[in-house]
Amino acid sequence: MNRSGISACLLAVVAVASAGGVQAKELTTMNEVRDALNACWSPLSDSKNSSVTLRFSFKRDGNLKGPPCASAINVQGDDKTRKAFVIAAIEAVERCTPLKLAPSLAHSISGSVFTMRFHSSD
Image 1: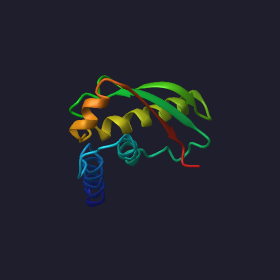
Image 2: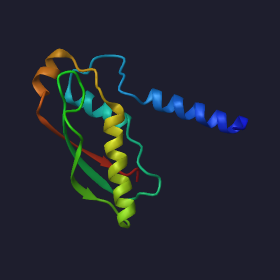
Image 3: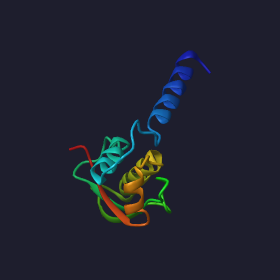
């Protein structure tokens, strides 16, 4: 592997490591949970006027309780584009968890269904 290939691999490792489910402080509100998940979302560059709503639940430890599920899909483009957009949103949630939940929030949301809409950047 040449030097530029190694550099690209190292950058990818740093990007993945920094996008993991590690927050500096405990999340105490649902707005903070939403902000943390949004920080992990990178819409596909070729998607316009698109969105997907995901349903998911958290365990008290901040891990997902099962995989996220798309409940509403509005993606412009062909089936391949649609699938890629939905997968990107699901991977963003999975990459961002476990969340560091404050005990009071963890107790109140554990097992509850949470929905979140992921939009294209336009």
